[in-house]
Length: 115
Image 1 (cartoon, one colour):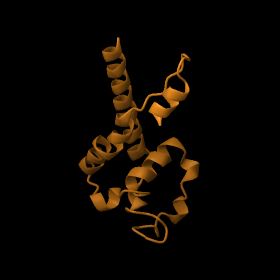
Image 2 (tube, one colour):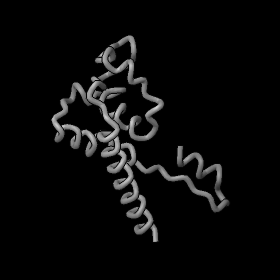
Image 3 (cartoon, rainbow, N blue to C red):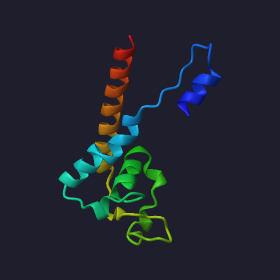
Image 4 (cartoon, rainbow, N blue to C red):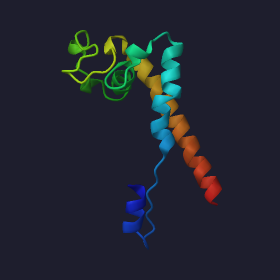
């Protein structure tokens, strides 16, 4: 997508960048941090488990239906792939901090290598 945007914007001062580390950290360092706090892969999940739910609790808690967490473990009918019951805003903030730190580092590295 960034390549297409850059083609579309050729000749303008605007450029799009794809920062892969922004996405990668949610599957690497953040998952490792959750494991270090005693959470299992089954809890962490891949969609709407502890990882996703905690991130959302940290960013916009009003978007989480906490009244439905108890009944949402690994359900093909709800789309939950994980167990969000142990989710907290504090776990999510740890993920946000990792995402921001690693994304900023990747942007700085890209900027320094392009100059």
